[in-house]
Amino acid sequence: MTTVFQAARQPARRQFLRAAAAAAFSATSLDSFAQSAAPTERQFAPQAGAWRTFEVTTRVEIAAPRGASQAWVPVPSVDTDWQRSMDSVFTSSGTARMVADGQQGARMVHAQFDASQSAPFVEVTSRIQTQNRMQDWKSKTVAAESAAALASYTRATALIPVDGIVLSTATQAIAGAKTDVQKAQMLFDWIVTNTYREPKVRGCGEGDIKAMLETGNLGGKCADLNALFVGLCRSVGLPARDVYGLRVAPSAFGYKELGGISAKLQGAQHCRAEVYLQGYGWVAMDPADVAKVMRQETAEWIKDPRNPVVAPVNRVLFGGWEGNWMAYNTAHDVVLPQAQGPRLGFFMYPHAETGGQRLDSYAPDDLRYRISAKEITA
Image (cartoon, rainbow, N blue to C red; front, side, top):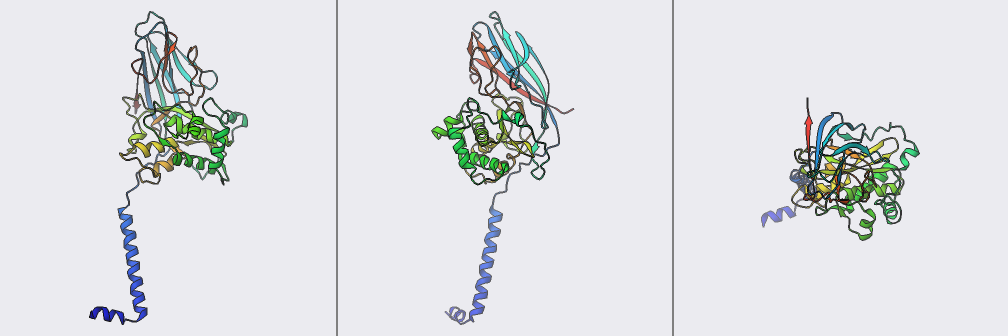
Protein backbone atom coordinates (compact mmCIF):
# COMPACT_ATOMS: atom_id res chain seq x y z
CA MET A 1 0.00 0.00 0.00
CA THR A 2 2.81 2.41 0.86
CA THR A 3 4.29 2.17 -2.62
CA VAL A 4 0.99 2.89 -4.27
CA PHE A 5 0.38 5.87 -2.01
CA GLN A 6 3.83 7.38 -2.70
CA ALA A 7 3.45 6.94 -6.43
CA ALA A 8 0.12 8.70 -6.33
CA ARG A 9 1.70 11.73 -4.69
CA GLN A 10 4.49 12.15 -7.26
CA PRO A 11 4.33 15.43 -9.20
CA ALA A 12 2.23 15.15 -12.36
CA ARG A 13 5.11 16.06 -14.72
CA ARG A 14 7.33 13.31 -13.26
CA GLN A 15 4.52 10.77 -13.70
CA PHE A 16 4.05 11.90 -17.31
CA LEU A 17 7.76 11.61 -18.15
CA ARG A 18 8.02 8.15 -16.65
CA ALA A 19 4.90 7.01 -18.47
CA ALA A 20 6.21 8.40 -21.75
CA ALA A 21 9.57 6.70 -21.26
CA ALA A 22 7.87 3.41 -20.50
CA ALA A 23 5.69 3.72 -23.60
CA ALA A 24 8.70 4.55 -25.76
CA PHE A 25 10.61 1.59 -24.34
CA SER A 26 7.65 -0.71 -24.99
CA ALA A 27 7.24 0.51 -28.58
CA THR A 28 10.95 0.14 -29.28
CA SER A 29 10.98 -3.31 -27.74
CA LEU A 30 7.95 -4.40 -29.78
CA ASP A 31 9.48 -3.05 -33.00
CA SER A 32 12.74 -4.84 -32.29
CA PHE A 33 10.88 -8.04 -31.52
CA ALA A 34 8.79 -7.75 -34.67
CA GLN A 35 11.91 -7.19 -36.78
CA SER A 36 13.73 -10.10 -35.23
CA ALA A 37 10.69 -12.34 -35.55
CA ALA A 38 9.94 -11.39 -39.18
CA PRO A 39 11.01 -14.11 -41.63
CA THR A 40 13.95 -13.28 -43.85
CA GLU A 41 13.10 -12.61 -47.50
CA ARG A 42 14.40 -15.20 -49.96
CA GLN A 43 16.99 -14.14 -52.50
CA PHE A 44 16.02 -13.96 -56.16
CA ALA A 45 18.25 -11.51 -58.01
CA PRO A 46 19.32 -12.63 -61.51
CA GLN A 47 21.69 -10.20 -63.19
CA ALA A 48 22.38 -9.97 -66.91
CA GLY A 49 25.85 -10.38 -68.35
CA ALA A 50 27.02 -14.00 -68.20
CA TRP A 51 26.03 -16.22 -71.12
CA ARG A 52 25.36 -19.93 -70.59
CA THR A 53 25.47 -22.54 -73.35
CA PHE A 54 23.15 -25.56 -73.44
CA GLU A 55 22.56 -28.52 -75.72
CA VAL A 56 18.92 -29.59 -75.60
CA THR A 57 17.97 -33.01 -76.98
CA THR A 58 14.39 -34.07 -77.74
CA ARG A 59 13.57 -37.61 -78.83
CA VAL A 60 10.06 -38.41 -80.05
CA GLU A 61 8.70 -41.92 -80.63
CA ILE A 62 5.29 -42.95 -81.95
CA ALA A 63 4.44 -45.92 -79.77
CA ALA A 64 1.75 -47.60 -81.88
CA PRO A 65 1.85 -46.41 -85.50
CA ARG A 66 -1.28 -47.04 -87.55
CA GLY A 67 -0.21 -46.44 -91.12
CA ALA A 68 1.79 -43.45 -92.33
CA SER A 69 2.90 -41.13 -89.52
CA GLN A 70 4.56 -37.76 -89.00
CA ALA A 71 5.95 -35.70 -86.13
CA TRP A 72 6.83 -32.07 -85.49
CA VAL A 73 9.45 -31.05 -82.93
CA PRO A 74 9.91 -27.35 -82.02
CA VAL A 75 13.42 -25.93 -82.17
CA PRO A 76 14.67 -22.60 -80.79
CA SER A 77 13.76 -19.80 -83.23
CA VAL A 78 14.51 -16.70 -81.15
CA ASP A 79 17.60 -14.50 -81.47
CA THR A 80 17.68 -11.54 -79.11
CA ASP A 81 19.93 -9.82 -76.60
CA TRP A 82 19.03 -12.56 -74.10
CA GLN A 83 19.07 -15.69 -76.30
CA ARG A 84 21.15 -16.92 -79.21
CA SER A 85 19.57 -19.81 -81.11
CA MET A 86 22.44 -21.68 -82.72
CA ASP A 87 22.60 -24.90 -84.74
CA SER A 88 20.18 -27.84 -84.60
CA VAL A 89 20.97 -31.36 -85.83
CA PHE A 90 18.60 -34.31 -86.11
CA THR A 91 18.32 -38.01 -86.92
CA SER A 92 15.25 -40.06 -87.74
CA SER A 93 14.06 -43.48 -88.83
CA GLY A 94 12.07 -41.68 -91.51
CA THR A 95 12.61 -38.59 -93.64
CA ALA A 96 13.19 -35.39 -91.67
CA ARG A 97 13.80 -31.76 -92.58
CA MET A 98 13.88 -28.33 -90.97
CA VAL A 99 10.80 -26.23 -91.76
CA ALA A 100 8.97 -23.14 -90.48
CA ASP A 101 5.31 -22.27 -90.09
CA GLY A 102 5.72 -19.70 -92.85
CA GLN A 103 4.20 -16.69 -91.05
CA GLN A 104 5.56 -16.24 -87.55
CA GLY A 105 9.01 -17.78 -87.82
CA ALA A 106 8.38 -20.81 -85.60
CA ARG A 107 10.96 -23.38 -86.70
CA MET A 108 10.61 -27.12 -86.29
CA VAL A 109 11.88 -30.48 -87.49
CA HIS A 110 9.21 -32.28 -89.50
CA ALA A 111 9.69 -36.06 -89.74
CA GLN A 112 7.62 -38.35 -91.96
CA PHE A 113 7.35 -42.15 -91.79
CA ASP A 114 5.73 -44.52 -94.25
CA ALA A 115 3.37 -47.25 -93.17
CA SER A 116 6.11 -49.89 -93.15
CA GLN A 117 8.01 -48.10 -90.37
CA SER A 118 7.25 -50.05 -87.19
CA ALA A 119 9.22 -47.85 -84.76
CA PRO A 120 9.08 -44.23 -85.92
CA PHE A 121 11.39 -41.84 -84.09
CA VAL A 122 13.04 -38.47 -84.54
CA GLU A 123 15.73 -36.99 -82.33
CA VAL A 124 16.70 -33.29 -82.38
CA THR A 125 19.64 -31.63 -80.60
CA SER A 126 19.73 -27.83 -80.47
CA ARG A 127 22.44 -25.60 -79.07
CA ILE A 128 21.48 -22.28 -77.52
CA GLN A 129 23.02 -19.58 -75.38
CA THR A 130 20.97 -17.74 -72.80
CA GLN A 131 21.44 -15.17 -70.09
CA ASN A 132 19.50 -13.55 -67.27
CA ARG A 133 17.36 -10.49 -67.97
CA MET A 134 16.98 -7.50 -65.70
CA GLN A 135 15.35 -4.29 -66.90
CA ASP A 136 17.11 -1.00 -66.22
CA TRP A 137 14.14 1.24 -65.44
CA LYS A 138 16.38 4.33 -65.11
CA SER A 139 17.43 4.32 -68.75
CA LYS A 140 15.09 4.81 -71.73
CA THR A 141 17.56 4.30 -74.57
CA VAL A 142 15.90 1.80 -76.94
CA ALA A 143 14.93 3.16 -80.35
CA ALA A 144 11.24 2.81 -81.13
CA GLU A 145 10.08 0.02 -83.42
CA SER A 146 7.79 0.92 -86.30
CA ALA A 147 4.03 0.76 -85.93
CA ALA A 148 3.94 -1.86 -88.68
CA ALA A 149 6.39 -4.09 -86.80
CA LEU A 150 4.33 -3.86 -83.62
CA ALA A 151 0.90 -4.24 -85.22
CA SER A 152 0.83 -8.03 -85.01
CA TYR A 153 1.38 -7.81 -81.25
CA THR A 154 -1.84 -5.90 -80.64
CA ARG A 155 -4.08 -8.12 -82.79
CA ALA A 156 -6.49 -10.78 -81.62
CA THR A 157 -5.77 -14.49 -81.99
CA ALA A 158 -8.10 -17.48 -81.81
CA LEU A 159 -7.58 -17.79 -78.05
CA ILE A 160 -6.72 -14.17 -77.22
CA PRO A 161 -9.50 -11.74 -78.19
CA VAL A 162 -8.89 -8.07 -77.46
CA ASP A 163 -12.46 -6.77 -77.24
CA GLY A 164 -15.53 -7.47 -75.11
CA ILE A 165 -14.87 -8.79 -71.63
CA VAL A 166 -11.10 -8.71 -72.17
CA LEU A 167 -11.14 -4.98 -72.97
CA SER A 168 -13.56 -4.11 -70.16
CA THR A 169 -11.49 -6.06 -67.63
CA ALA A 170 -8.27 -4.37 -68.71
CA THR A 171 -9.84 -0.91 -68.74
CA GLN A 172 -11.00 -1.30 -65.16
CA ALA A 173 -7.64 -2.72 -64.08
CA ILE A 174 -5.61 0.24 -65.39
CA ALA A 175 -7.93 2.99 -64.11
CA GLY A 176 -5.78 5.98 -63.12
CA ALA A 177 -2.64 4.86 -64.95
CA LYS A 178 -0.79 7.68 -66.67
CA THR A 179 2.03 5.87 -68.50
CA ASP A 180 2.54 2.60 -70.36
CA VAL A 181 4.79 1.36 -67.57
CA GLN A 182 2.06 2.03 -65.02
CA LYS A 183 -0.48 0.23 -67.21
CA ALA A 184 1.78 -2.80 -67.54
CA GLN A 185 2.45 -2.84 -63.78
CA MET A 186 -1.26 -2.63 -62.95
CA LEU A 187 -2.11 -5.45 -65.35
CA PHE A 188 0.73 -7.57 -63.97
CA ASP A 189 -0.54 -6.93 -60.44
CA TRP A 190 -4.09 -7.75 -61.54
CA ILE A 191 -2.96 -11.18 -62.74
CA VAL A 192 -1.04 -11.87 -59.51
CA THR A 193 -3.96 -10.73 -57.34
CA ASN A 194 -6.92 -12.23 -59.21
CA THR A 195 -5.67 -15.44 -60.83
CA TYR A 196 -4.05 -18.53 -59.35
CA ARG A 197 -1.99 -21.53 -60.29
CA GLU A 198 -4.10 -24.68 -60.73
CA PRO A 199 -1.80 -27.75 -60.64
CA LYS A 200 -4.52 -30.08 -61.97
CA VAL A 201 -4.61 -28.39 -65.38
CA ARG A 202 -3.06 -30.58 -68.10
CA GLY A 203 0.22 -29.49 -69.61
CA CYS A 204 0.61 -25.71 -69.57
CA GLY A 205 -3.10 -25.04 -70.03
CA GLU A 206 -5.15 -24.05 -73.08
CA GLY A 207 -4.89 -20.26 -73.01
CA ASP A 208 -8.59 -19.59 -73.73
CA ILE A 209 -8.76 -16.24 -71.96
CA LYS A 210 -12.31 -15.30 -72.93
CA ALA A 211 -13.63 -18.51 -71.36
CA MET A 212 -11.59 -17.82 -68.21
CA LEU A 213 -13.08 -14.35 -67.78
CA GLU A 214 -16.65 -15.29 -68.72
CA THR A 215 -16.77 -18.27 -66.36
CA GLY A 216 -14.83 -16.55 -63.60
CA ASN A 217 -12.54 -19.59 -63.44
CA LEU A 218 -9.21 -17.80 -63.21
CA GLY A 219 -7.13 -20.82 -62.26
CA GLY A 220 -4.64 -22.21 -64.74
CA LYS A 221 -1.03 -22.59 -65.69
CA CYS A 222 1.46 -20.47 -67.63
CA ALA A 223 -0.25 -20.69 -71.02
CA ASP A 224 -3.45 -19.51 -69.34
CA LEU A 225 -2.22 -16.82 -66.96
CA ASN A 226 0.44 -15.26 -69.17
CA ALA A 227 -1.91 -15.38 -72.17
CA LEU A 228 -4.44 -13.48 -70.08
CA PHE A 229 -1.78 -10.88 -69.27
CA VAL A 230 -0.89 -10.61 -72.98
CA GLY A 231 -4.55 -10.25 -73.97
CA LEU A 232 -5.24 -7.57 -71.38
CA CYS A 233 -2.18 -5.63 -72.55
CA ARG A 234 -3.11 -5.91 -76.23
CA SER A 235 -6.68 -4.81 -75.58
CA VAL A 236 -5.53 -1.41 -74.23
CA GLY A 237 -2.92 -0.84 -76.94
CA LEU A 238 0.20 -2.25 -75.28
CA PRO A 239 2.02 -4.58 -77.71
CA ALA A 240 2.59 -7.89 -75.95
CA ARG A 241 3.43 -11.48 -76.77
CA ASP A 242 3.75 -14.91 -75.24
CA VAL A 243 7.19 -16.51 -75.45
CA TYR A 244 6.96 -20.30 -75.53
CA GLY A 245 9.87 -22.34 -74.24
CA LEU A 246 11.43 -24.78 -71.81
CA ARG A 247 13.20 -24.67 -68.44
CA VAL A 248 16.62 -26.23 -68.98
CA ALA A 249 18.34 -26.09 -65.56
CA PRO A 250 17.61 -25.62 -61.85
CA SER A 251 17.24 -22.12 -60.48
CA ALA A 252 20.47 -20.68 -59.10
CA PHE A 253 18.45 -19.21 -56.23
CA GLY A 254 17.01 -22.42 -54.82
CA TYR A 255 13.43 -22.02 -56.07
CA LYS A 256 12.45 -25.56 -56.99
CA GLU A 257 9.43 -24.39 -59.00
CA LEU A 258 11.47 -21.98 -61.11
CA GLY A 259 13.84 -24.54 -62.60
CA GLY A 260 13.99 -27.86 -64.37
CA ILE A 261 15.81 -31.13 -63.78
CA SER A 262 18.16 -31.12 -66.77
CA ALA A 263 18.23 -34.88 -67.22
CA LYS A 264 14.43 -35.13 -67.47
CA LEU A 265 12.69 -32.10 -68.92
CA GLN A 266 9.48 -33.54 -70.31
CA GLY A 267 6.88 -31.47 -68.49
CA ALA A 268 9.32 -28.54 -68.07
CA GLN A 269 7.69 -26.51 -70.84
CA HIS A 270 7.00 -22.96 -69.73
CA CYS A 271 5.78 -19.86 -71.52
CA ARG A 272 6.66 -16.34 -70.48
CA ALA A 273 5.52 -12.96 -71.73
CA GLU A 274 6.94 -9.70 -73.01
CA VAL A 275 5.38 -6.26 -73.29
CA TYR A 276 6.69 -3.47 -75.51
CA LEU A 277 7.23 -0.19 -73.65
CA GLN A 278 8.38 2.97 -75.41
CA GLY A 279 12.02 3.74 -74.63
CA TYR A 280 12.58 0.32 -73.06
CA GLY A 281 11.74 -2.01 -75.95
CA TRP A 282 10.55 -5.54 -75.24
CA VAL A 283 10.46 -6.05 -71.50
CA ALA A 284 10.38 -9.43 -69.72
CA MET A 285 7.25 -10.41 -67.77
CA ASP A 286 6.11 -13.56 -65.99
CA PRO A 287 3.15 -13.16 -63.61
CA ALA A 288 2.36 -16.87 -64.06
CA ASP A 289 5.58 -17.85 -62.28
CA VAL A 290 4.66 -15.59 -59.37
CA ALA A 291 1.43 -17.55 -59.11
CA LYS A 292 3.37 -20.82 -59.32
CA VAL A 293 5.64 -19.86 -56.42
CA MET A 294 2.61 -18.79 -54.38
CA ARG A 295 0.83 -22.10 -54.94
CA GLN A 296 3.59 -24.70 -55.12
CA GLU A 297 6.93 -23.50 -53.74
CA THR A 298 5.97 -24.36 -50.16
CA ALA A 299 3.65 -26.96 -48.67
CA GLU A 300 1.16 -24.21 -47.83
CA TRP A 301 -0.59 -22.16 -50.52
CA ILE A 302 0.71 -18.61 -50.06
CA LYS A 303 -2.02 -16.04 -50.73
CA ASP A 304 -0.07 -12.82 -50.16
CA PRO A 305 2.51 -11.71 -52.78
CA ARG A 306 4.26 -9.72 -50.02
CA ASN A 307 5.20 -13.00 -48.34
CA PRO A 308 9.04 -13.21 -48.03
CA VAL A 309 9.13 -16.29 -50.26
CA VAL A 310 7.14 -14.59 -53.01
CA ALA A 311 8.10 -10.91 -52.75
CA PRO A 312 11.50 -11.06 -54.52
CA VAL A 313 10.05 -13.15 -57.35
CA ASN A 314 7.12 -10.76 -57.70
CA ARG A 315 9.52 -7.82 -58.02
CA VAL A 316 11.97 -9.41 -60.45
CA LEU A 317 9.47 -10.99 -62.83
CA PHE A 318 8.13 -7.57 -63.72
CA GLY A 319 11.05 -6.71 -65.97
CA GLY A 320 13.33 -9.71 -65.61
CA TRP A 321 13.73 -13.46 -65.55
CA GLU A 322 16.38 -16.06 -64.86
CA GLY A 323 18.34 -17.45 -67.81
CA ASN A 324 17.83 -21.12 -66.94
CA TRP A 325 15.13 -21.19 -69.62
CA MET A 326 15.13 -21.11 -73.42
CA ALA A 327 12.55 -19.84 -75.88
CA TYR A 328 11.22 -21.75 -78.87
CA ASN A 329 9.02 -19.08 -80.49
CA THR A 330 6.34 -16.42 -80.00
CA ALA A 331 3.84 -17.95 -82.43
CA HIS A 332 0.05 -18.23 -82.10
CA ASP A 333 -2.43 -20.10 -84.31
CA VAL A 334 0.32 -22.32 -85.72
CA VAL A 335 -0.40 -24.45 -88.78
CA LEU A 336 1.89 -27.49 -88.78
CA PRO A 337 3.17 -28.15 -92.31
CA GLN A 338 1.26 -31.01 -94.04
CA ALA A 339 -0.73 -31.74 -90.87
CA GLN A 340 -4.22 -33.20 -91.13
CA GLY A 341 -5.21 -32.17 -87.61
CA PRO A 342 -6.19 -28.68 -86.45
CA ARG A 343 -3.92 -25.68 -86.03
CA LEU A 344 -2.32 -25.12 -82.63
CA GLY A 345 -3.00 -22.25 -80.27
CA PHE A 346 0.74 -22.33 -79.49
CA PHE A 347 3.70 -24.61 -80.19
CA MET A 348 6.06 -25.71 -77.43
CA TYR A 349 5.29 -29.45 -77.23
CA PRO A 350 6.17 -32.16 -79.76
CA HIS A 351 3.20 -33.20 -81.87
CA ALA A 352 2.54 -36.22 -84.06
CA GLU A 353 -0.08 -37.86 -86.24
CA THR A 354 -0.53 -41.48 -87.28
CA GLY A 355 -3.09 -42.84 -89.70
CA GLY A 356 -4.27 -39.27 -90.23
CA GLN A 357 -5.15 -38.80 -86.54
CA ARG A 358 -3.52 -36.27 -84.19
CA LEU A 359 -1.99 -37.90 -81.11
CA ASP A 360 -2.36 -36.47 -77.63
CA SER A 361 0.93 -34.78 -76.69
CA TYR A 362 0.12 -35.34 -73.02
CA ALA A 363 -0.50 -39.11 -73.39
CA PRO A 364 2.83 -40.98 -73.15
CA ASP A 365 1.26 -44.28 -74.22
CA ASP A 366 0.70 -42.83 -77.69
CA LEU A 367 3.36 -40.17 -78.10
CA ARG A 368 6.55 -40.84 -76.18
CA TYR A 369 9.10 -38.11 -75.88
CA ARG A 370 12.14 -37.38 -73.76
CA ILE A 371 13.91 -34.04 -73.36
CA SER A 372 17.23 -33.43 -71.65
CA ALA A 373 19.70 -30.57 -71.48
CA LYS A 374 23.44 -30.45 -70.99
CA GLU A 375 25.30 -27.29 -70.09
CA ILE A 376 28.48 -26.73 -72.08
CA THR A 377 31.09 -25.10 -69.88
CA ALA A 378 34.27 -25.50 -71.92
